[in-house]
Amino acid sequence: MTLPNPLVRVSITWLWIAIFTVFLRVSPATVHRLFPHPYLSSYLEILFVGLIPALFTIFGRERWSRYGLTGQGLAKSLVCSLAYVAVAYSFSGLTAGHWTSSYTLVSSLSVPAKVYYALLGIFAYGPLEMFFFVWLVSNTEQAFRSKSGSFLLSLTVTAILYGLLHSIFHGFSAALVGVPFFVLGLIFRWTKNSIGPMIAWTWLNQQVWFLASLLWS
Image 1 (cartoon, rainbow, N blue to C red):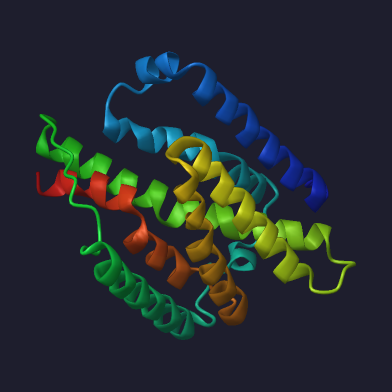
Image 2: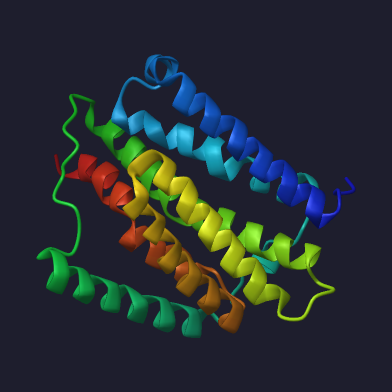
């Protein structure tokens, strides 16, 4: 299957996000009826951010290594990413008094169901979300490739827009989520590997910890 050019791909992805955002804001009651339990939010996340990039990559038969899913640079990627996690946790501990969310998701689900939804949540809000970001940055860079500094421009624009997207749902302070994405995007660029950033974002994302708490609740 021949993919549309990168600008079209990126535009379709942001258009999908915009439509989904309007739907979530205009009809929250409908969303609640479709996803009545917190652990079902993983399906919403997959539809919201993971679906379009994954479909483009699969049906376009692109190499996953283009988006850093490769053994090349893995060691550097892990070291740099985990170092950033350590810095982020230290900063959070010093400024907020805790390193991660203390919220626990309590559910009457069976043990197998808890394990399934916990793992689904870890995947959707961790590696898949970072893949979405890396995919957007990479394709935006291709769209801007005629310009000097196209990667930094693509990374900056994508991180700002993604931060602002979070602020629509969680308040202006949530826009700061663009900072870790920017840093992890730089690590991806330097190492040519996104596995480290995927693991780092999984550790940093509060929603991952919330859903993973099904494993011990």
